[in-house]
Picture 1: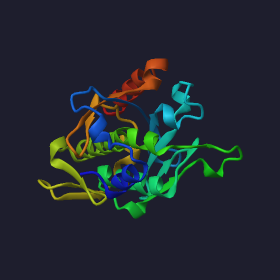
Picture 2 (picture 1 turned 60 degrees about the horizontal axis):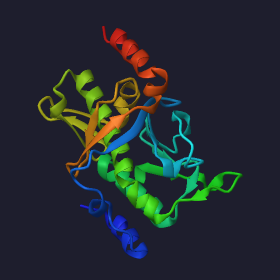
Picture 3 (picture 1 turned 180 degrees about the horizontal axis):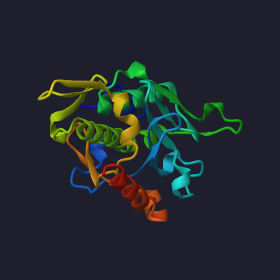
Picture 4 (picture 1 turned 60 degrees about the vertical axis):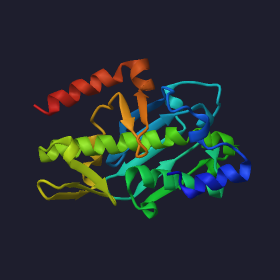
Length: 227
């Protein structure tokens, strides 16, 4: 179900909702990378033209969206190159909260409003068209968290679930906050796709891996560390 904030933005700007102008048969792919976060935690970056400092430029170092799952249970979304109006800001937090099943109060959003150079203002159309990208970033983070929990608990991945900021494994009565697995999740490899809560499957690709081969290096380090 679309969050009410998404519907309000679409109605106010007369912009079709994403589900109406993106075919369910279309092969969607999000450009996402994973990094260890400073101070501990999981950092997921999303490269999308509408959020770059210059929409025409490309490159993995120009990602305009960062989702940080912190090791101390205070999570953050940073969009450094554009500004969002209040409705978009609230909506983006709702989207992250929905996909990650986290309390919205635990997610802090920072956009480019504090930059010395006036940032570009994101349009409602750009925001609505980027919705599935935002959701894919959050869903990919959840996948990594649950994969790390399964590894730590020596459990089956499908038995681990995330609800209300807590990761649980019903078969073994294991419970831990999402932050407990954030740092380990940052060393895991992204899958080829992620499934959103609505059931839509989104392909994943790594701009950084394509450009530098960093993913192969990280995969080798992870394999060695697990022996």
